[in-house]
Amino acid sequence: MKPIWIVDDDQSIRFVLEKALQREELPTRSFTNPKDVLAALDHADEEGGPQVLVSDIRMPGSTGLDLLEKVKARFPGLPVIIMTAFSDLDSAVSAFQGGAFEYLPKPFDVPKAVELIRRAVEESQREEVALEAVAATPEMLGQAPAMQDVFRAIGRLSQSNVTVLITGESGTGKELVAHALHKHSLKAKGPFVAINTAAIPKDLLESELFGHERGAFTGAQTMRRGRFEQADGGTLFLDEIGDMPFDLQTRLLRVLSDGHFYRVGGHSAVKTNVRVIAATHQDLEQRVKEGVFREDLFHRLNVIRLRLPALRERREDIPMLTRQFLNTSARQLGVEPKRIADSALSWLSRFNFPGNVRQLENICHWLTVMAPAQVIESKDLPPEVEVQAALADAPAVASPTPTPTPTPTLTLRPVGPMTLPDGAALVLGMPAVQALVIPPTEGWENALQIEAIALLSSGRTDVWDVLTKRFESRLIQTALDNTKGRRIEAAHKLGIGRNTITRKIQELGLE
Image (cartoon, rainbow, N blue to C red; front, side, top):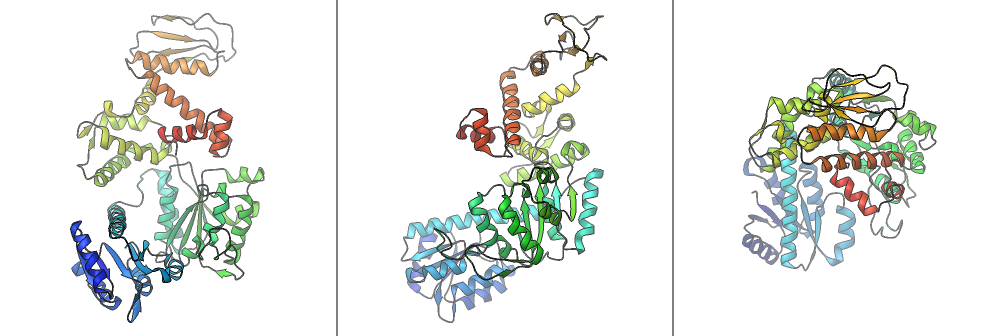
């Protein structure tokens, strides 16, 4: 591990931190002033830079805040902890909120200081792993024609700062495309800032986007820069734009028009130079018709539209993506990558992936942990994959005339020459030794019975769990679609508690 750099002109502070960190087997390197730190950073590639930087705020010749600004400009992922006396606290917090990992008030409790530094070390190591993964992995994978169209569009847009609207189902990789558009744009050297407008409460979203002045509302103890200011000179990615509150859409339209906005509680206009990329899984034209999305904002965002295909529309990419995700999972967990048999890939390729690429990635994480051998076989796949692939293979015969007529009670009998009632369907069991006559008038219960007989005939012993999970997933997803993603309202309509729907969403992987 790289050392923790300590910067303080007070020898006693340096001594206390050095000894405390050495007891925790954390290496250290000490400096008495920012000038020496910057000189050492010039040779960081040769000697190895710091894992974490801990700096005092007041030192001869320069300040810790000046050092913070220069360090962050060169090493944006390096966690910096500022030590400050209580008399400096207000100015320190307001000045370094945009960059410091945390502040450490003096006099400090040594165990708490060590705990804070350990948290910063963990954050630094996570950042290193993420950067390695980004460097080792292509931005996006795909040989399917639909994905090749997306790649070509990214190439065409590389010399333009035009606003882009990315559409597609949840889990198709809209943020990856936004990253690629930024990386290959004229603003690639600027920051990439992302915000999910559906994940932040309405009362906080305005402050998140535009920032606020000190005292603008209760709890606003310092001035805060919003995402538009943070993304100045770069790209701002507005995810799930279709869920943005209607009254905030007006403010967004104004800043898209002239690049000016006001912080919450502010009286001076702030100018920003930002490229905006928006994304949504919703039908914005329909949202406009419903009166919940501004038509002028829609046209302002819909300059260039990129539609991402669902994974079921690019099945030829599933084997390549699966192997890539298995390698990524193994690298993150520090284990040997697992291989996957062709038979298991065949089953995966027949799965519809309602959660798209994100669901495939989660399945690969699950397999890396749960598959018992180094080679993943069909029997190792999650139950929902096996069930759907088996049903996709199950043959069915339907009557050409849809007119329903009364039919006899359900019967099971050997397969052979037989006459089906009008509107009935014949579904073969998995061993292909029996057939089920399905009356056409019993609605969705019939479909459930078809699923159940196929699973029961396959010899499975977890049919209850498999079908219950699928039923709950579809019911909760339908309720969330009906309430535009509002969980509390969906729980109320379903007659369950808020905690229950939150737990079910996590258990069923519906995030």
